[in-house]
Image (cartoon, rainbow, N blue to C red; front, side):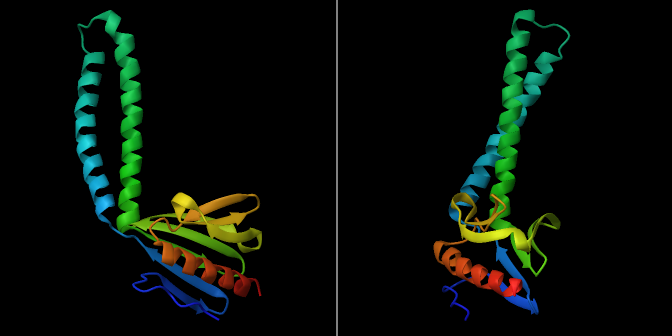
Length: 176
């Protein structure tokens, strides 16, 4: 028996064929995520200016040799910080505007994360899945063979608990 979805639930859950399910989890733009994206964009603009000046100083014809090591070490740390900020910005935009899809059938489970035409796919054997559980930052986790894969970070608490029950029911269904 299917559980009742929470009010204002945006999750699409359908049985495409016998023992073949699709779950679509849309992104959820929030004020906090929009603020984080704007902040990161501004920070990255300043980061780019600092990166350009550091690299120009490192590769300048006339420079102070005592500053070289310090500047190179600073530029390495600055570059790592910028790459981390780019990754975080991508994650925030993904949670806001991307979608996650779970495709479950008798043989495999696919988690597909899509944003603006690009997609990342992770695939697992259905037989290796031990359970689904609530999973902190990722929202939900799929446990399999001593490891786990997270998904559903944009879900609300009500959607998370509803979907957890549905996924357990679907897992029993696809296993027969």
